[in-house]
Image (cartoon, rainbow over all chains, first blue to last red; front, side, top):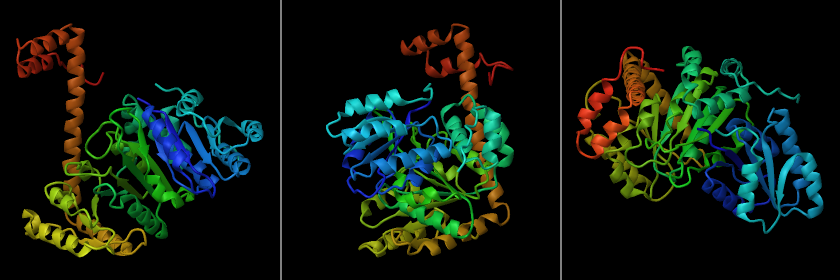
Length: 133
Length: 331
């Protein structure tokens, strides 16, 4: 029996992981296996962890404003490792104007402040691209 | 970097790629072995001849004593020696949702970009022995892939999560001061399976008392006398700072050397192989007998008879087993 596996990561320098932990907990309660990697992750660390853990989803929480740099860089590294069927979700303080750019970079869904846990869990489930037995 | 093509999911090509150093294939193969009991026999048939080469270390102990931090240090020491290291970190599955939060990587972040290290988090998925049922075979996949050292970190354990004893060559049991009553409880449990005892956070108050307690426990253990017994050394460590890790590496090497003398290793491996074989036979026979009894339409009737107390469970089990015939097993 396969479980949906999600990597929850905090790339970059901001030190607030309350939101990421709440989301991790919600995904767990939805029956997923959540690999929580903690603060201050580099794009390289995230892409490698996603490969080693064979996850379906990489969920990144960014409050620092560096999303336009960190997210495309992480996605590019994931592609270079062959992780083409792993979907990417981003949450945090993301200005509305930046959403189209992130979507073009390959993000399945962006969650700004006020997003409900229900909507995040639903989007996570919908974003899984590999078959779940 | 160039784009790596997605390895196809055929078992055979995955095994070949994983053993040739393709980490993506290795990761996929581990998932396959973890998720699909039906393909496990085929994978094992391919990889089993390649296993038995890695040195297997187990790290266990109560929650919060610093197992992951210690594993991170051990990985660093083995890497400094040039060895390829794989880590399996097990965390518990929630009995309510079936989900899990696997957080051991938090203490091993710096290793994520080292090409000589491969870390995989596993959830227990309802198994209670401190590991998941698939852990043994996941370790075998890593062994076949050529990792020289494989470290298995169990869930935070209490008294009876002793699966690791049947998997690792050297079991490191970690304790920390401030959990004094836990030590009492552990006496009859996981402390007995230790090959090396670590007192982590040894710079804290209570470390001396903890070491003394452990010494006393070892003195009282029935196996502490006799020429051919191994007395677990007690190593003081401050994993967060790296203090004592060299001494722990030395203690582990001593145990490996002790194990390598005479027939000790062979006896240990033989004992395990016997237990594993019995478990597999029991599992396969039980499944086959049940399937045969169901095909005959008798299973539900026997279950109902036991429930209604028309038949005792032992007699019913004998009847189910009587459906076993040559060739029925393993289908």
